[in-house]
Amino acid sequence: MSIFGNSIFGNRAPGVGAETQHGSAQEAADSGASVQKSDAEWREELTPEEYHVLRQAGTERPYTGEYWDTHTEGVYQCRACGAELFTSNEKFDSHCGWPSFWAPLTEGKVRYIHDRTLGMDRIEVRCASCDSHLGHVFEGEGYGTPTDQRYCINSVSLRLVAKEASGDGPQG
Image 1 (spheres, rainbow, N blue to C red):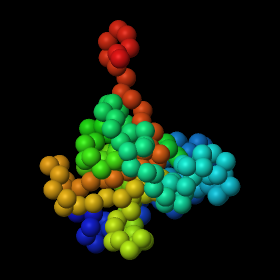
Image 2: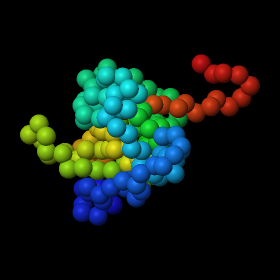
Image 3: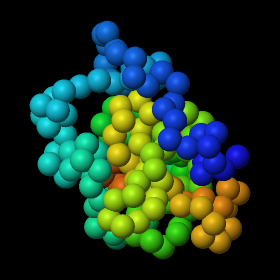
Image 4: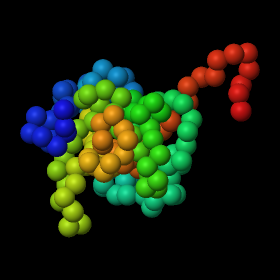
């Protein structure tokens, strides 16, 4: 199903908007509850670059982010709240300068907003748990992926939790 149709486009993921009464941001993200923090709390917890991208919908420069060319196996979490959003299984080389995925981890992990800023017509991708800006999703660009979609995500919006190496010792 296309995210560009009316069925998913622009809707909040289930559980977004409900206040978290107690527990950590990771617990709230894991339970599907919304992470609610004041602007001052976000500024205190995030670096200036993280705050600019995650809370003000900024964009990091291409080919500068930590994960644009990473091939490490693992799970990509929201850097703001720790919600698991993408995996290395869906990551692909789009050569656009930002990490690219052909789908989120599961439906409901991200939400979509119609973005008409900067004279463009795009679909913004946000974390469904804390409403942080992640990047944009594009469709029909001709990449040989199962969904024909490219989730173009800022590295600074993500934290990679590498898959543990199996065997006796660390692999390098």
